[in-house]
Image 1 (tube, rainbow, N blue to C red):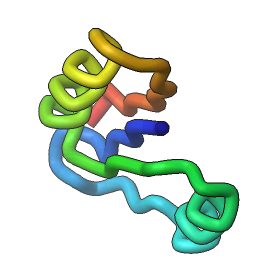
Image 2: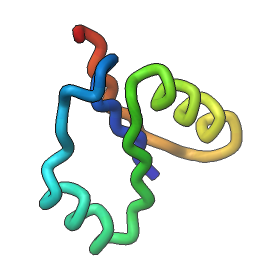
Image 3: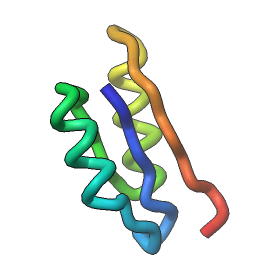
Length: 58
């Protein structure tokens, strides 16, 4: 499971090829604005293994 942040104002995009690749490998992906992505990550990390990539500059 992976949580990806799109920045503070949703200015960043996640390449559709990335989402397709993760889906093909059975990886559940959550994509959200940074504050929500952090919340999702913290909730998931409390009970399971999860990776996260967070953009914090915009």
